[in-house]
Image (cartoon, rainbow, N blue to C red):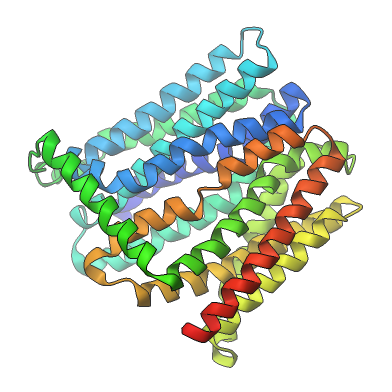
Length: 405
């Protein structure tokens, strides 16, 4: 695996840059505007391109080829991040800051999805099949590692530097990823196979996309089990959206901490999440998969309600970590169950649709926070309403799922 070290660096740099921006943008927007509402609106703009990319990534990679898409994704992330850093040299209004950072987050999210799918497609082409599982395990470890490191990394940098140096550092991370892809000898040796992408007409591409959407939507609408699983995931992500977009402002104004501490919360949640996944196999030896899902939902509801009434940073951090831990418990249950429900011949089409559906209310949470989150009391109120909505939807959904699965 020594020959794959440059590949691991490419994945690490791009993933670290992506994840750092996910946590960095709400902090930056709040620091520059002093408004929780502004963070909400930027979060809403950020999530729309990401949602669009989810179902299109696979088709685009098949059409253009994984290497070209990976180079395009790395170059675009490098250029856009550097451009926004330069734009911040100008005197900007709050509205311009919201739009610029929203577009930055959306573009990075869009190209992150493209890069991820391209990398997954590229992997089997640069290594023998008997080592593929080992490669995937290393890549998964890198992804988990950056999910833990990136929020803390963003917090440390933003505590010491302003927005422009922060974006400059991230743009160079993407540049390193780009240079690694272009200069990699391993990819170069396989360039003929990697670029051997069959030419497809625009009409056929459009028909393929339309067909995938039709098959995916048709199956989801016919499956009540998937609809109820999605209902829980949507309401869960809807609530998480408020936390991701509003935590920086709430920590500063509501708990008299610092906005950049939101990054440390992400690292804490990531560490607890890894610990939780290590415990899941032991949990399943004692309890059923159904009970794992119910436990995750109940834990999420309790932590989500409790975080609203947290009076200090320590309590907020504990419940914040539990929320993401319980989200992981439910995700294992949901993914396992839907793998049993969806036929293999349409699995990829259905998953693309499900990803969009599961996260479709993330922009809405940003819009609601933008409209009603102009004070700490309003932020706590919308988070409380989201928690209660989640509780009602989860109760009704599990009532059906317990009878039919």
